Amino acid sequence: MTSRIDELVAGLATVRDSDITSEPDSAGGRALLAAITTGKAPVPRRHRYPRLPWLVAGATVASAAAAAVVVGVGGQNSAPLRSYANAAVAIDVKGTEYEVEVKNAYADQREFSEAFAKFGLDVRLRIVPVAPGGEREIVQIGPLHAPKGGMPPGGVSGTSSAVLKCPPGQIACPLKVRLGGEMFRLGGADIVIGRKAAPGEVYFDANPVQGDRAKDLRLTGRTVAQALAEVLRRGLTATFTLGEFKADGSGSSWDPPATWRPAGERRITGVWTRSSTSVGLMVVPQKGDPQPHPVG
Image (tube, rainbow, N blue to C red; front, side, top):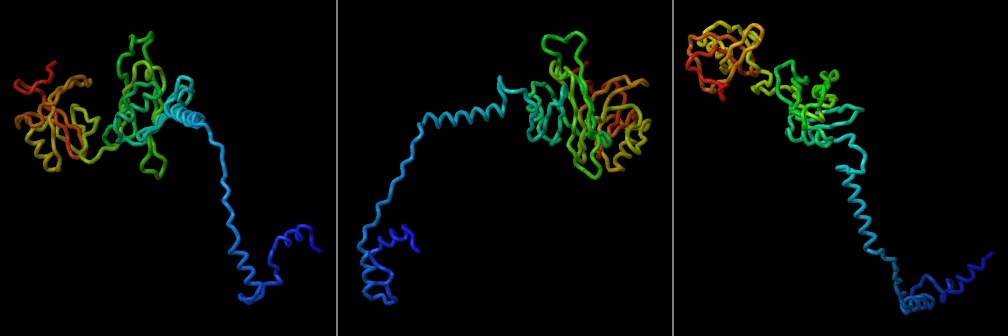
């Protein structure tokens, strides 16, 4: 049974299926070919789309740019910055404290300062080489400068703590420090954290001392000539310091020119490790020795 639609479609054909045989030169084949080649090609229809006014499109782009600015640097009406990171450091606000994760201990100091400035903090963070055993510890922390307008009543306080240990089996770990207190906003802070020193790199905490403070070296009381011979025998180098300390640790010292050497018969009063390849030697100053610069 055929439907009405089948009858309508069949009525459109000018050549019937029964007129076509397998022979291309038959009367039906020639009639079909003539019908195809003499027909007019249909004219392509053009589709028209409504054009948006350029002002609307421009407004969309402007909105996207404004959103990027707000996300990137914040604005007066944006929420307080809760986190920021660059290649050197990541800072997150944790309640009233700032959690600082140092990602690159060898980064430029300006990258650290840039990150703190995003939170309105005046902080100088230094990652310095230290003697073995002092890595990942806060070497020193203190005010960077006096607050503008003077010190508030009661002074300015600050708190800090550091994650000192790596998880078991992990060799390289980010340094993490938590900072809190008004010191970091009002007076600024100078924070120094230790890192592993490269071979021969002078330790930040290599300070002159009285007595023997170098591993396996017993040079205090020996002459300069004897001490230099022993240092050379061990494949080390030596740098001299002029100074004198009391039993309670008080005293002063200064560095003479790097090429200066005391007379060989003078006595060593202090020895300490400066790097993996050098030691410091102290002698008591005498008349004619180089003076502190500036003198004072």
